[in-house]
Length: 252
Length: 178
Image (tube, rainbow over all chains, first blue to last red; front, side, top):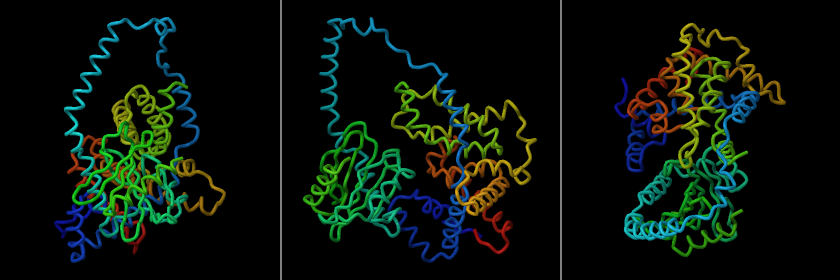
């Protein structure tokens, strides 16, 4: 006999459910002995597989052989110096100007759309989810030398991680969230009673407003090089801005 | 090194271990896995322009699987291969990186062997979904993309694979729960 919730319990275990479903499921699991056992089984088998596979790495000669193969692949075509020196024809300038104007118009027309970026909803949903029991952190540590290396294997980016306990922002730990179709790195800080999730992900260009609110939560966004950062919290604007400043100043 | 090669080295090559592990469980042979990964990486490199922003690991694993499927059709010798249950210890001994601690190395070899035995006993479609989820940490959407199946199928297949693995574990070590 299998509980009808078993697939949902599995999805919950795999971190594939949104915050409301997770809450509903946790309520169910409290009463369902079968799903409790299922969660324990899932945990045990994952631990077994990960432990056993941890030592399996590609043999070194494979990488060497592969790089030899890559060396033999045709390099990207290099433009001839003559083609590079020729001055661009005047109509190219005219076209560039027109294209620029059209681009500006398009951007102006799309501005309202950009403001309603679904990424904002994703960020706030991820923040809310993180506040549910057992969801806040994957790596609990107040030591940035523990949190930062952890991201190397679990997220696609390596953000600034620092402990600002002296300034009132205690480093609590880190977490990986799936965001904007990539594994983003989340650094969690605590300020008084408030938790602040600082998300970071690959962002080619800034696309989120510097500050906005969603469902009553404050969202502050900034960009450093090709990393988008976003702090979400119920803390006040001043606190969020202070943390943003600290992080920007500490960027390596 | 040109720009394309540099980006390939930094974005794709870090997933070489994952590609090789996946290929190893697809082909059930360390030697075949190397051939498949070599071919897959070259193919990946040729089609590499414009990958920026997408998930390099899932992309590479999908190519590995395509290469393995092509390889499989070409050779049709997979069926004749022995199950990992009877595979030679050389495979495992060769793939577990030797550490300074021989006791620990021996334990890792045992664990890797047990893993091969457990996974080898599963049907291929259950094995691949389990490896992608549990070992390579792919989410449902990525698994669906790699295997070319709907997310609902990913979920049901994963559930069956996990149930089958649990049965195998219980049979493997009497009295243990996993």
